[in-house]
Structure formats: structure tokens, C-alpha cells
Length: 351
Image (cartoon, rainbow, N blue to C red; front, side, top):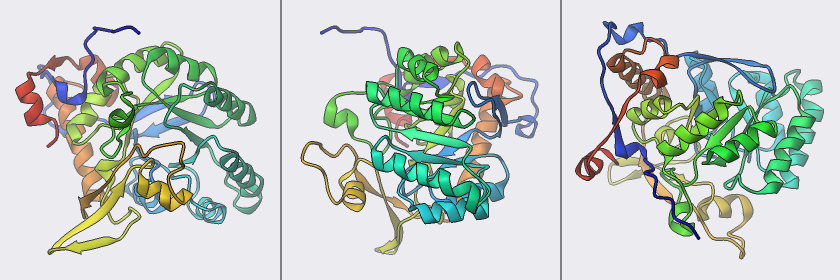
């Protein structure tokens, strides 16, 4: 046993210090990024926001809405879509703004193999982005799986995680990941920290993993913990290349789930993918060897996602004007975080 006494910070623990700027308006800010990925050598251009691969958020309807907005935001489709629907989607909507998501089970790999075998023949449009998603990215079998997928799909952009420390971010990049997903337990419907005692404050995790990944030519995706647009600015300011959102995109028309009228208020059920709700829906229940590490909540119905996405981008542009970053790329170079008191943590943490 050992204790690390270095200070580790979450989004709620900091604010971004304003700086003098020559920018007259947020209209002058470009929040698009252009990346060339280390292993696939493919290029990405757009606003680097990704809808999480949760079955209430990472939907085909969300992908279509993002595509219609035309800003290059992407969606990690949840892994529970049947093969036939995936083939149909890729045929009609293409692969530009979606990540094909898988776990590491034999069933996941078999479905991917079947998709690859049929997609080019049936749709003419195979996958170009793959999200390999597990709760615990520290296991050797997971690292081996990432290597296997890189060998099998040398020209596909691979995002893999989740991890929270620099050395593991390096391991995944060297194993073939182009993007490392960062975050254990920060999500609004994740209870991993409560159930296991395991986790890492998200802001510090982003800073440390980004530093490690960028040194090897890789990228990081901050996954979880954002509850307001200002958190996106903090994530990008900390060095994140992409930000993945779940709760902030929940409750919209493009999400799966029924809208319920409760006392005159419209609400939508939203749950973590390790919750009782998800495991009963997709696996017939919680296996006896594991415990639920997610929760089910009800969120307000929020209508079309376009308004929310527009507000997010507006907040991000505004943050850039406060520090004089003309492009999103410059935000991390212009960001100075200031730690705030416990009293301010209470005020700003969960609004």
C-alpha cells in the first residue's frame, strides 16, 4: 500500500483565468480541429465532440442530427444495434461521422467480423472509425485485443479505453490506439467510484494522459464528467483532443427511450451502461459475479438536440474569447487554471 499526496483536480475544483484578448466577438473563434491519426493515417476535421456510446445517446438518430448540423461532430454508436440495422445505416448514411463500437467479448468480435464481411459487398461503405470500449482498460487481455484489432484493421482509426493514467495511455497508443479514452467514474450515471473505490479526478486525468499521449503522437478523448458547457472548455483547456458526452446529450428527441408525462412535466429515463437497467435490458440481468456500477435517473425532456449543441459550441467559443484563443487549438496554450475554494466548489460543481 502507498499513498500519493499530489493534488488531483476535477472540473469543479478549477476555473479558467481570463486574459487580455484582441478578439472582438466569439464569431472570430474557430472551434474546428484538424487531426492526422498516428496509426490509421486518416484525417479528421470538425468540432471534436463525440456522443457517448450509450444506448440512450449513441443513436443513429443522433448521428443523423449531427450530420445535418454540418460541424463534424461524431457519434459513437452503441454496441447493441443488430447487424442488419448497422448495415442498413452505413448503406444509407455512410461512415463519416460515426464510430462503430465494440467490447472485447467473442460475440462483439463475431458481429464485427460479420459486418466487415458484408458491409463492403452490401453497402459499399465499411467502417473507418472503431471505438473499443471497456470499463477497465488496465487489463492485459484488453491491451492484447487492441493490438489484435490494429493488426486486423491497419487503416481504421481506433479509439480505446478507458484509462486515467499516463503510463496506460502510452501503453494503448503503442499497442495501436490512435485515440485513448480517458475517464473512470466521472459520468453522471456512473457509480464505479462508489461501488469500487476506484477512480481519478477527471481534470488531472486529462492533463496527465494528454501529456503522455501527445508525446507519442496520439490523442485523448475526455470521457465523462462534463455537466455544463464550461466543463467542455476546461477539458479542452486541459489538453483533451476530443470530448465525449453522455448526460449533456440525454433527454433529446434523438435519444432512445420514451418521453413520460409526470405531473405535467416531461421526463426521459437515462441510465449508465453498467446499471441494473442496462444489464437487464441487454444481458437478462446482473451476473452473480458482478455488481451494478451505474444508476438510472430521470432527466427533463429537452426537445431537439440542435439547440443544445448550438449552446455548447457557443459556450466554447465564448471561453476562447475570454483567454484570447482565436482557434480551439490554442485554448490549452492560453489556459491558466485557478483552484477555487470549497465554497465555490459547492456553488459551481453541480449546477
